[in-house]
Length: 154
Image (cartoon, rainbow, N blue to C red):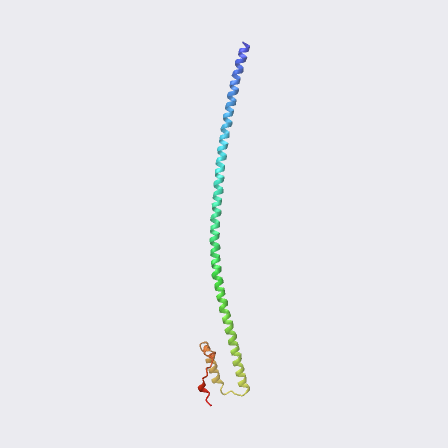
């Protein structure tokens, strides 16, 4: 009887052990599945974050390219404006030098007239000088004098 009860309790114990092992295996499998699902979900969120970051970077690149093109465009306009101003300044410097030379020549003429004692024509000279220095008359002062053969009759 001892042997039958020993066998019987041993098989019951084995059934309980095997039931516990199966239960333990089921619990482990469940945890493993849960962990795998959690890992999949975490990986999915990570991929989504990476994709969002990539999209944000692409949008930033597009915005920076747009700003760069605008800056280059403004730089081009500013450079053209600068070149125009430099050209105008060059023309003005040349005109200033020409006018300075004219003024110097006129001052020399006045000094010569004062040195020779010619003072009675001075008011008329200043009137002529005023006419000569007016900007709209300058075009005529640089015109060449044309001579014809009719002027030289012997």
